[in-house]
Length: 412
Image 1 (cartoon, rainbow, N blue to C red):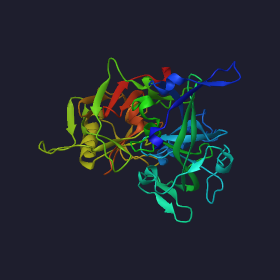
Image 2: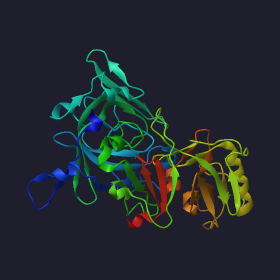
Image 3: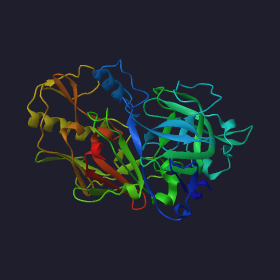
Image 4: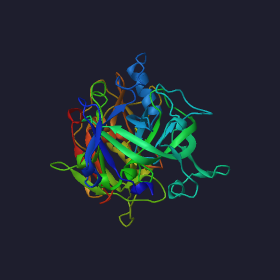
C-alpha cells in the first residue's frame, strides 16, 4: 500500500553536482520545515499591488477557506506546484493537462504523460476506497475524485500516484515516492493564478501528513505570522522532530478523531472575557465533545449561536464602545474606535487547555474608525487561522492532541 511506502530524504548540496539518498533516513524519524506564504503577501505570486489594504481584507474574508500556500514539485522530471495548505481537507491535488475546465495559473500545468513515475489508481485500491467522494471510471477502471469546498470552490479528476518533493527551509529536499494525489482536470471557484491546487493536511489516509507516515511520527505544526509582518516574513509548517511544541506557556488539549471526515475536532468549553466565563452550554450535565474544528485554512472563527450571543453581550459591557455597522457588511459585531482596542483578558477554553488571545486574534480593523469581532455565529463551529496567529500550533496524531504555545512567528 502507498501508506507503507519508504520515506526518503534527498539532500542536495549546492556545491556538488549530484544528490545523495541517505540510507539512515529510511529508518529514523526526521524533522524538517517548509515555508507558508499568505496569498495576499507581496511574497505571493497572487499578490496584486493595485489593490488597497481594505480590498485585500475584503478578499481575505470572502475567501475564508483558502489563505496560505506552500511550494512543492510533482512528477519525474519534477514540475513545480503551489498548493493551499489546508488542515480541513485531505487530498493533495494539482491542475493537470488535458484540462476541460481549469482556472488560470502562473506555473506550468502538470502533464501526466511526461512523468515517468506517474500511475493512475485502480478503483479496487484501498486508497480509492478511502476517498468519500470517489467514483470509478467504468471504461478504464481507474479511480476518480471530487472535492467541494466551503467557499464553493471545487476540483475533479483522476486519482494517481507520483513522486512529491518538498523544498525545506534548510535547502534540503524531501522526496516522497508513490504519493496518492489528485490530477485535477475540471476545477473552479475563487482560486487565483498564484496557486495550482490544494495540499490536504487533514486526518484522512490520503493527506500529506498521513502519507509521510511514521517518518514524522504523526507530528506537524505551524506558526502563522500576523498580517502586519506577512509582507516581510513567511509562516512555517513543520514536520516530525521540528514540530514539537514544548516549554513555558504551552498547553495541550485532546483531539477527537472522526473517521467519517478529514477534520480535527477539539472540545470547546467556553470563552472568558475578563473575569467572566461564558460556557458553551448552560446545562452542566451536558457532555460537550468534538464540538469545534481547528482549521488552518479558514480565516474567521465560527461559534455556536448561544455562545456568540453571550460573547457579544460581554464585549459590549467590557468595551463600552458605540456599536456601528461594518462598512463592507462582512462582519456582524463592530465598534466605533479610532484607537487600537486594548484588552485585559480574552481566553478560549478548550478541554484541559486555556488559550489566551491577543486583540489581533479576535478583533479586526475594517476602517479608520471601525473595529470588528472575528468570532461569528455559525452552526458549524470552526477555530480559524486569525485566532491561531502568533501561536505555535502542534498536532500529534499518535497521542491525538493539539498544543498551543504563544510565539512571535515572525522570529522563527
